[in-house]
Image (cartoon, rainbow, N blue to C red; front, top):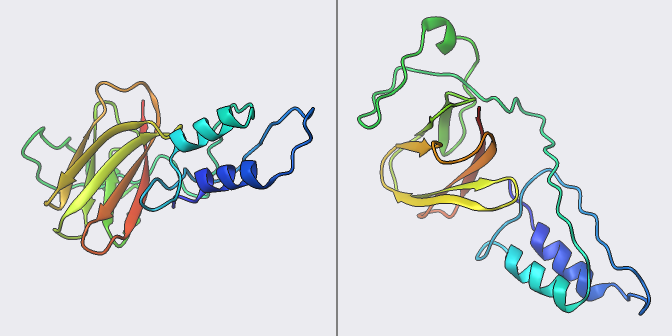
Length: 180
C-alpha cells in the first residue's frame, strides 16, 4: 500500500538543522510508492520544489521490494467485450491460487504484452490509476463496472502499479503489473 514518502521527505528537509556548508542529500528506502494528495499532504512536485528551494540534491532510485510474486496471478473464465479476453488454458487458470482482495479479485495475464485485466469484487464507482515506479501517472480513469482493461501498448517494458480506489468508501487497493 502507498505510504507517506513525499510527506516524510518534505518534513525531513524542513526539520533537519543543516550545517550551512553541508552537502545536503537524502536517501529513502521503502517498499511502496508515495501517497498523493488528498491522501498525503505533499505531491512529488511539492517535494522537488522544496528540495530546490533548500538546495537539497536528490536523485530518486526506486528499488522494488516485495514479499509477493510480482508476476501475479493467472485466472480466466471472464468475458470482455473490448478488447477480447485472452484465452487461458485450464493449466494456466489452475497454475496459481488467485489472491482475492477486498476491491480487486484478480489481475491477469501478468506479465502482459499488450493488455492486462483487473476483475473487481463488485460494481461501484472506482478510480483506476496506473503509475510507473517513479510515480509518473500513465493513466487515470473513473469506472462504474467490475472490470478494467489496462492498455499497456504505449508503455515500455517494466513494472507498473495499478491503484483502484472505491470513491464511495475511499478505500484503495494496489496491484503490480509487469509488461514484457
